[in-house]
Image (cartoon, rainbow, N blue to C red; front, side):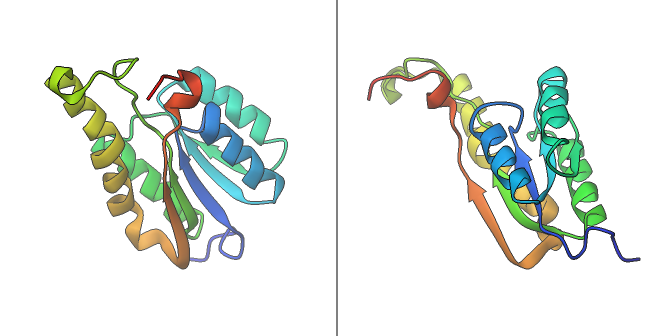
Length: 152
């Protein structure tokens, strides 16, 4: 079965409801890319989807990229769009702000930050790897400091 999106460019963007993720989605949408967007906040994601839908085709699914089931849902959407030309892992966690030194960093919080910023993006890549087109690009970036700037 051939997808109606197979000949078009499609990007999956995590953390797409605000900040850098939403700006990247907007920039790609203006250029005609199909978008698959996700974030943990259903209301903010709905608002992003409504805005972006005036520019291009948008599939929005709320969820947490740390959740295996959500990553599988994203892979199903990627397959339904004929594959991905870009995966932008933008969802992230800042942790305490201002950032403490490592000797003072609460270990349980550090574990949560690593799970969100390192393990979950790898999990997304693993989930969609068979749906990445041959010349697809993967970008791993977070932008929390743009929301809560801090020294150092």
